[in-house]
Amino acid sequence: MSKTSAIETFRSLAIGSKLWFRQKDTERYGEKPVEAIKVNLHDVLIVGAQFGWALDRSDIYSPVTEETLSGATKAASGHYLGWGIFDNDLQVWTTDPTVKRAKVKKVRPSLIGQRFTIMSLPEGADPAIKVGMRGTMVQTGMETPLVVLDGYHRTTYIHVSHLGIHKRRPKITMDRLPPQTKQVLDLLKAKGSLTAIEAGGVLRARSLAKRISELKEAGVSIIAENKLDHTGQRYARYHLRAAA
Image 1: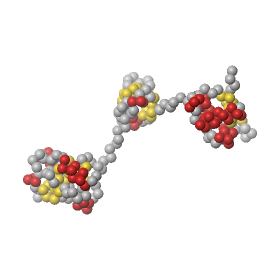
Image 2: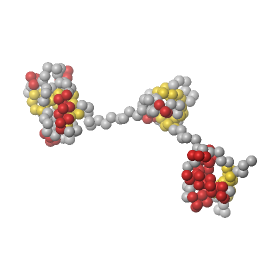
Image 3: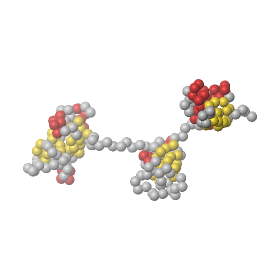
Image 4: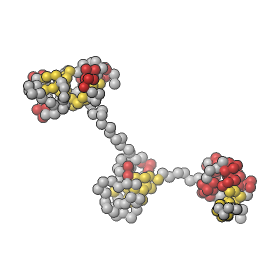
């Protein structure tokens, strides 16, 4: 925030408004922004003050009510502890800058109809709701979407922080095979069968079973033959099934 915008922010606040400020002459009292109440065009009363200048009630403009002044600190002399606002390395906030506010996470409307799992229980949840319970999203656009739970007697609002949403991925088809899955298919066609060790040696494929699963999803007919190697370890050899 520039010095000009800070002083303009202060000037634009109504008399009696609460604000937080920091400027060069408050540095000796700590780095935390000072909570204050605007009482005239250039002075503030410090809330919970441990320091400040003496301001008389006559220095405080009439829009400031006694109720507003109840948050200000009054010295033994009867004066209020305040501070002058000057355009010298000034920063002004209209909300407490030391408080981190959680961002509201809104659920996209595109997730309507999406499946989810209850990952944790909100406080005061219905005893019938259990961790791990599955359901479907029926209303979104807010941080507490309306959901219908499997086996639950009614729809309910559950905060998105308690949900594990299962995002759908597009169905794999022959024209949308991942590059390594295409390579596995080509190798299968060339060799007729394939094991994980062979795929790893030729293609550096780390998970042949996953590539085979993608090929099956795309409609490729593959048979898995379970075998034992010379050490007794079980492995699978995958064969392309001949077209009928």
